[in-house]
Amino acid sequence: MSNSNSDLNESPNHFLVLDVITRSVGNLEKIAKVTKLSREEVESIINDLLTQRLIVKVEKKAFFRKKVNLGVTEIGLKLLNTKKQELEEKRQQMQQSFDNGNGTQLQSYMDANRMWIPLMLFSGIMDVMFFTSMMSFMGMGMNPIESALTSGDSSVQDTGTNSGEAHQVDDHGASADTAGDGGGGGGDNIDGSGVDSGGYDTGGFDGFDGGGFDSF
Picture (tube, rainbow, N blue to C red):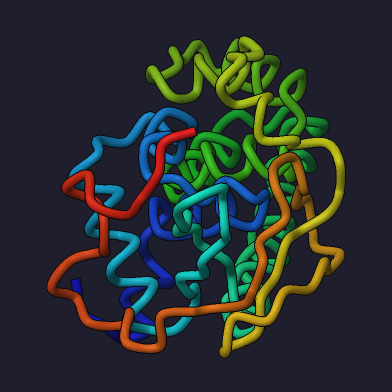
């Protein structure tokens, strides 16, 4: 994937991972579990987001060692919220077509935006009841991640989807709790001290091979 934001803007999985990180889920294994993406894809996405400085690595002292977590930057949070506003407009279009019983138009909207549905469900932009009603109306089946998001999968709920807080760090790793659209603060706060300032290279995220990235 290119490092340009224009390419990222067309990648739902990048925004899904970014949204998960705003909820204080800064661990690769947990991100993969929540998003239902492969570990390899999540690692690649994280490296892309680091390169574009949409997220940063931060260190947190834990007993006799340091934990490496991820935090979203102000730029990353703004980009995510802009995308969520766009998706809210699309959701409203779908809602209007559904309310009017216009199946043809609704099908057209779904075909154009189906890849964004998981992010819309996860972030709370689209209500689960509305989504299931809409799918039933069109006689369409759900894919695995849509099914997980609509069934109250515990790994999704653990991220604090409904708490309305997004965890943000600045470009230097300083920590700040920032309100965000549909964000959540369901995990440990990230201590911004000791950020690895050299962590933007795409050669690999420190500790993905078991070195410094803790599973907890």
